[in-house]
Image (cartoon, rainbow, N blue to C red; front, top):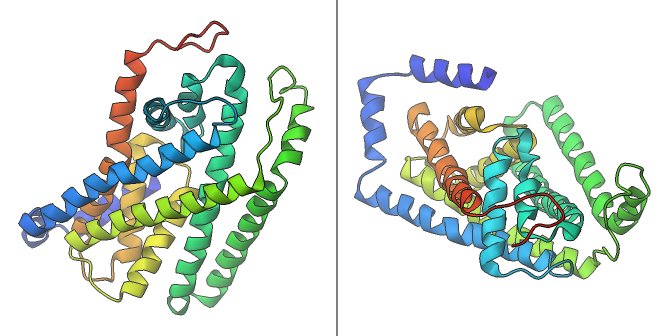
Length: 301
């Protein structure tokens, strides 16, 4: 809520007819083409994620690419209702047989950690790009914190099978079936590659929207700011009704000095949210209501 109040205050203070007219410039012919390209890249962005999900869950249960796509977008829909999208797994596992859902849930969280590792690595690179612009004490603290977080996630992935064995012994999870669930390291490397590829796609989407909003400057700094933006957005717990405000505030904070006003930057953040989150959520909701799902043992798909 604090981010919502701050972004509203900044927009109110910078309100002028000139700034309002500059927003209209975003939708001229050339910029509209950039926005259209961003929308088209939505399918590549999520297509890679769907392929990752289909590939990663193949040892547990083979599902078609179509079902995998519906599974992923239903996850986005349900995830938007929970802080940090922690509930996303509930939508993703619905297409799996009940006896396989515990395993699919585990794979979902492992896949999320792999994507987060890529985001942290890229974000740390972005921090290095901005090292000269950040207070030295803050820079060292942030970099150390992110480095420790990266180390923890790397150890988790490296020892993931032992952790799964340990979790299976806990009283809470004993009733679930995790038999024969083993994640091979070559598969983790494939997931890491696909996660990096997907990161490049959605970073490029952001760059196109920033270009449409008139952000100019050193490409090195723009790329660094993009990676820091995603780093912050991936570590701030968000729920749907305030997410756009948080995104707008982070974007304005990081790109405010790169040749575009707060209004245009807020539009860029909102467009990115609409394209990559809202569209999949709406379509995911359609998938959800068109299918009859239950978490019971007699689920038929």
